[in-house]
View 1: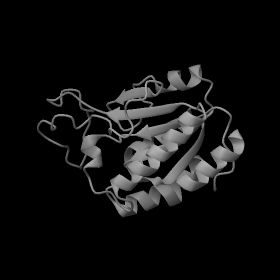
View 2: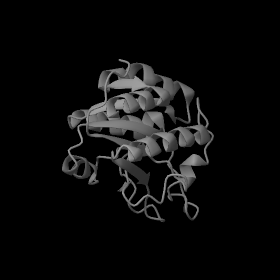
View 3: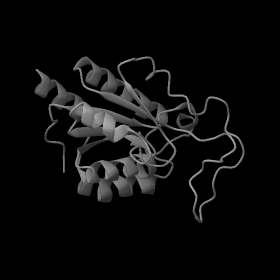
View 4: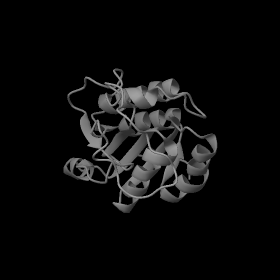
Length: 194
């Protein structure tokens, strides 16, 4: 369903736009383009006095706090490079932003994200980030389950796999909320805040 409205208390939630993840190429959009579009959205949200939530994923250097369970996919081994979990400089440095650190795919599980949003009266979130089919989709599903209106900025997210991105955007996201481009969201934000 194309984006129709933004609630008076809508928050931008940015998933994993940090050094180590932004180093990946991204598909269908380069991670640099996703970052640039997200920066435009974050500036607009801040300009309208709306919350911006910056989510980063991290873990113990030795992997001791990795999510347990058996999977067929291989997991990264060895220590991550220093600073891999540091937020992109283009997004950092705004003291009014909410910072959330996660250790799982979803920004809700095991974090205080829901508490931050509810304390601010947030009823809708706009999601951006990397990877579409992992962190973004997991967070969108949890937001939907928590009763938030969900909007997904589909050109401000990307994946490591084009088919996985397309599956999320075409099959999953329409069941969870509304989708639109960065330009659509910025236009609606300006119209509803004038």
